[in-house]
Image (cartoon, rainbow, N blue to C red; front, side, top):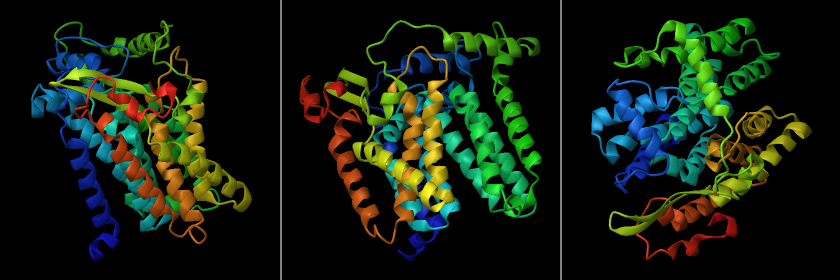
Length: 410
């Protein structure tokens, strides 16, 4: 057990736990779930390089689904396999951010386990959608940028470049990762202010230039498969106009949807989405895209506490943890989408685990064992809700009422 008191063995153990949990019964159900009806066929076409399809989003997320199909087969395992790896990357990325940011193992373990137990991460780990890949690259990208802060010599530069590359890949999955480029740049300037020894003395202008240029080049490189299409291949002179075509599709006014919700309602876990609720594989099954109530609601308290600590004690880590979540939800007030859905909150829900771990660590002398108690509560809720997160066999069509705390969850 002494090995688990060091960061690398502890992270490895948590990673193995996450991967095992996310992969268990990954083939159930054997039919498409929710937006897999769009992305799996698009990945099948992309994998064969037949021609453009699902052109409202960049290519990389669908390319990764196609890679999973190529490696594991054109079946539910192949569709979803790389999503499980992406979610494990999210869990380990949270561990790395907390370890690098605080330098203590306990909050890193608590935060990563809370992320593992957050229903949103578990559900997105088991479905072939773009958001899981986007989130993994964002979380790992921010972790790499923090890793560069603790580096020296050439390590600073290649770690910083790695972070920029990962953020570029995130945008290549879904445009909603784009605001994290300026957020990362702002965090870099704040953490560097008065501490030019951080990032090995990297000049501020060099850090921002690498972040912007490298992420942009990597983003455009993700369109390479489109240049190889058998039908209507992309060309260099069409690359920028194609971005405008995607923008027009992303911002078109859509008809109302029964599952739509306003961005300001997402933090309250008010309007989740049934990804599946039907008879499948010989039984009634359900998959509810819902946040763990302990993490979702407790996380809001933690964000407020972090911001309070920032104002009262000028504590840097709590301030950044609180602002990261606040910025991640505030950006939806200006993103020009005609409809909103709870799964857009996926990345913000990940930052809640960080805010909780940072807040509990900041007041660790007063809240000695609260982190363990909170972790236990989150685990109990995960076990309770597991049947409607993992598409297990239910008693019948009305079985869902057992888990409906709010009328809006139905």
